[in-house]
Length: 343
Picture 1 (cartoon, rainbow, N blue to C red):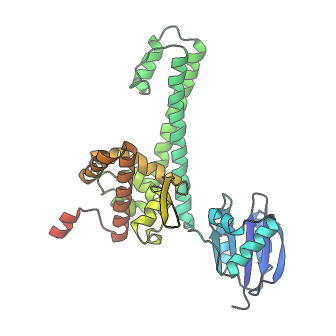
Picture 2: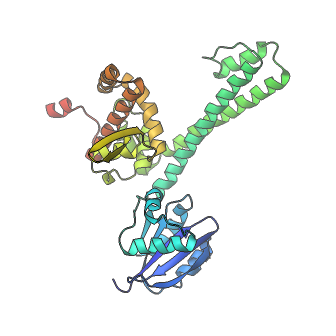
Picture 3: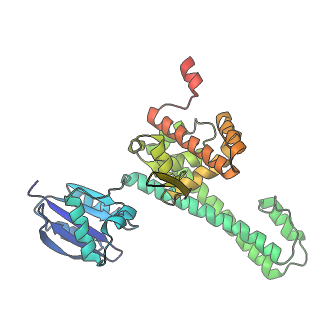
């Protein structure tokens, strides 16, 4: 389309650098606008020509993307890691970055990344905050144990974080400074707060109609619980963006990076280019899933014969990804292959 503008947007907390180019690469206009909804609205109203926009994925991209999308013919988000490899150069500033984004967009070379729908991103934000609350709870438990060890107090480490045992313990413990007792009570109160908060957050997600059916279907897989099912749904989004299990495993960070040159191939450690939230939950689930799933138990047992325990856990996690993706694509409850053939 000749009468179409290509706009590169370099997004930051306080301002957005923009560069508008036509199909031939001629700069129509460039400049800066404040990262505020009113300023963005005023800027968009100045356009009389249809436009396509591109911006880099940052923590500020979400709300700007949602705000601009209704006004654009198409709006794309670039993968930051892949973008670095393309635009690396001596000169780098906001104007240059915006211009390069516009050029990549008009030449169809933009390394586009998947953008979840707004509603899914909002639910994902809740899930990630729940995980943050749980991490704070773990830190609080460790702090309670640390305070007791600092003063040489003896306690049952299996029961110290139980509500009943903790209060009984504080009543009878001896030779512990009053200041430590107060800190222990404060830590316990925080722990109760974290537990209540995570339950409320999960109840919000559990009752959401947009994801309830899909989550319940995934939970028919033996070894897959509510937290793993919710995390998968909210981090993956549209499962059709993965054409095979290998792509999904790579996205989850369950395979190592491959380096091949001159016919020689080598594998490094687990790749850091992954969805860390999904990777963490999958690995934790893989540690206990074999207890409820015979097939996963066999995978774990077979891998233990020839490899380390951590490698066996990774193998189980990969199998879990295969199960989750298969159920998503079939849109049917989980069933073993033998049961499907019998039916």
